[in-house]
Length: 454
Image 1 (cartoon, rainbow, N blue to C red):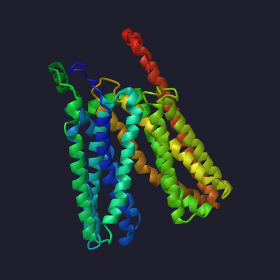
Image 2: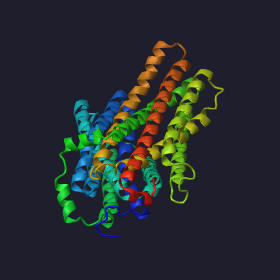
Image 3: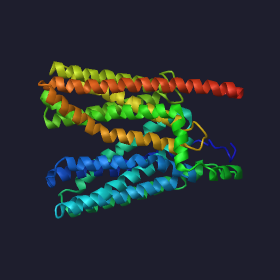
Image 4: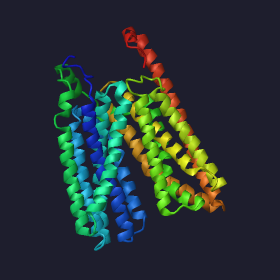
């Protein structure tokens, strides 16, 4: 392979190292959004709205993702953005712990520190996460994208789990000083792990720039023009809509499922927490299924990544319709099986969407992978930020209009089922547009026929 080949691939060793970076992101984010959330509500007796708004604020900050991705495109190297993002995240997480504990003495000063902290968390996640996906889209071969996405996301989930368990033990017995010490220690740890994981990684897979290519990079459009160019791409716009709708539907049920199980099925808090665990287990199964289906050995015999993306959305709609039926039927419905089905479907379409995202990022001029990833990352962040609010707001509205609780929940789940169906329709059109584009490229460049249409 030539040293100037822009498609020098990453191997599994490189993918696992990127997975470690993603695990670092998950480790600090789960501390900020889960542990600090509990401390604000329980130990400090603050309204749940306070941590809810702070988490929503960190999602709002992530609207800068396209700009972060553009920066990685312009500089060519993604490593500085990833390492800088992890470092910013570590600082933000530590400040969030300081601000949370400071609320006990001075609420408004503590809240001000937390606002700064969650802004840094949003910036750190945006810089590191967008650049990581951009690098994967450039360097991971087509037939490895689904397994690679699954590997990286499973490692992120492991980061969630290990941090929750470890930090939970380390902060006992709880004290504000202990919380700050543990959070700062975690920040130092994730920066060290990310530095070791990224050391020499991009240099070992990135080709040496040729002089003409270097000159071409210096003449890149400015950010607004680059974003406008990406937005003019019909496929990019359609996929942005798909990401937003599917992730909005995905996140809208998070804060509704457990209250639903408690109110309609009489489950205890412990049982509803286990039900949430059942859902996450299903998500993992769905992710692994797409990884196998998209692997080189299976080679499409279990369906294309596109089919899994569409099918996952449709199956999610079926599962949400099942929950709507459960709301009307009550305790006779097989709730756990329904939740497993929802998790499998959610995991399948999520990983298929990420694999598709990596493929579509390379469309266009080949210089806008980061900008494209940033656009879709911003759509996802906006969806997650609105999802919790939308789900709970719809539930409250339905309960104020409808006397029967089961029917109120059924209306919310039905709305989410519709969103998944519209998402599936968008996914179908993305696939058709991709195929039409590939055929047009084949007609323009007959030599591509030797490689075939994927």
